[in-house]
Image (cartoon, rainbow, N blue to C red; front, side, top):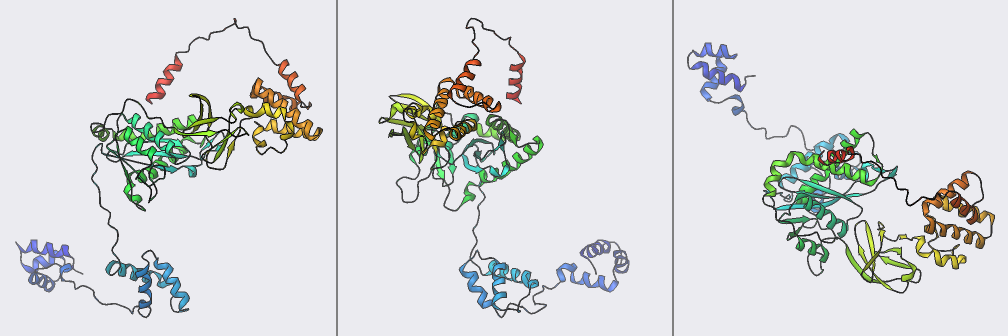
Length: 492
């Protein structure tokens, strides 16, 4: 078969040689050469378009039944429809005809189907837009001290340079959003003109509510003089930059964990440092475009905005309890009947009374949970030991597994009232002498097979109390290498 290349070669040779010589040197017959010279076309230009079917359409008889399905539901897959007609007409269509049916459906949709959504490429400008969102990290299997660490990452991205930052959090709350956004912009050294999120409830009101954005999110944006934007409903592509960075960041973290050889970290701080270092590595190649961004960023305000949400006043119940965001917390029993205020942060909450912060309590994740501190109620329980056996929150009265085991041993050896009183006296020692010391005493007594009660615990504590001379102070020499290591870690 004569190719286009042969004909072009023939034309070049014909400028200096005869037809016969040119045809021979081009590798074609003289008659064929004369045909292409007269037509002044190459072979590909002389082929007629194939406009006829080489075989009968096997779906022609049912196509009028197929089209209504396609017209009503654009999301219906061709394979699903093919299997439906296989069941409707048994023995008519074979599995080998699936590709033919899929091609016919694709061609119908391209020629007669409804218009498809068009995505318009956007031109990004330095310093103009940042996007942020939360992404779940549980699938990476990270653990802290052997315990699965289920968490999210608040992810912040500048759309022009793709500079990104992130912070660990546990819910898509306003507090997590505020804390993550502020960490990002203060690390960046400036704020973009506009910040866009998806329609997360922490930032965007539900349809029909007064106002477009929540009061807390609006206050955050106003504090930094940033215009707030949200994506349209069911349009994650409008936050496409941060969505794509989710995928790439998780892949990079997965590779970093594989290089590390372990997904377990000693504590949360070590894992947070690992994540921060990875963000620095990802941003290393964006310095040039980031400099263009920084020239257009707005200045930071004089101070950060308090990320805590103020809640209250909340009345302390007769059980020395308060409810915050559908979770129950205990407070000091002296506050029973009083009204306290709560400042709710992403990781903890503060109890305020009479303009004083009385306590900081770790925040519970989710709803319907409770966190009671035995120190808050131990005094009353000592006076009412009979209430302990059926106390609704009795499980929170066992700080460690050794305390639970001690109570079980006491219950096996004594009546319920005596066991409760003995255990509560041991628990009171933990409140006064220190939980770690009493836990060590229980561990030692159980290991040696001794009876566990208030007397044996007191004896152990007295025997293992080492008096320290307050005048005997030893000042260790300063190891300068520690500071060098810190500097190396900072600039690594």
